[in-house]
Length: 265
Image 1 (tube, one colour):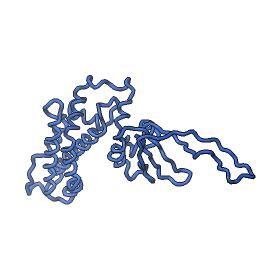
Image 2 (image 1 turned 135 degrees about the vertical axis):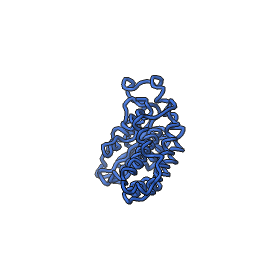
Image 3 (image 1 turned 90 degrees about the horizontal axis):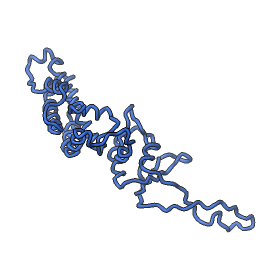
Image 4 (image 1 turned 30 degrees about the horizontal axis):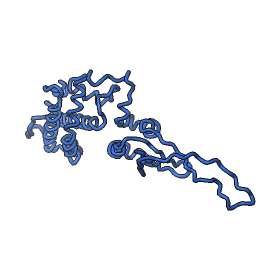
């Protein structure tokens, strides 16, 4: 499939890129890359057309018109001059590579073309392969949980703490639901990392009492901390379920965090 990209620039800076890639590349570009880069580009790079193939024709040499024959065309045939590039080359050379210090999401072909010397075979890391498979299988449910949090809790929880509202205790519901779901995805059933279990235990199972108002942050900060840790882990689980087709050789920090949480690192 040929994907035609427009760089959105004007005049001499305008360019079209003809990218040869799999049929699912546009879905990755629009559903993963575009949300990641949204707001960071002055003129967004966009897919403007697709084609199953392109016809390549050599450019016809320029032929000056004789002064006495102005009705003669400059060239015998229309000029068609362009070249295609592979998806991997396009992503390496054209798109933004980092935003706010964080590397962009990687398309599956980039992962598959990592130097074999830098990447271990899947069967040498069965725990990671199983974790990734579990995350992918649970992706609809994980995205539902994320949507529930974004709908209100992400903004509401810190506000309730600052406003001294006992509604901050409702954050425990989201924390418990997220962590329970993530525990169930562990390649080896059992507890998560000890530090995370300690943070979650300190921020859940609490009931508001009037006396808590006298030492507010002592009682409520652990609740908010546990909530945001749960949200971080949920976001990482969703991100890498989308990005990875197999365990990577070069670790992103978020993936390394997940491996630590699941005692795989």
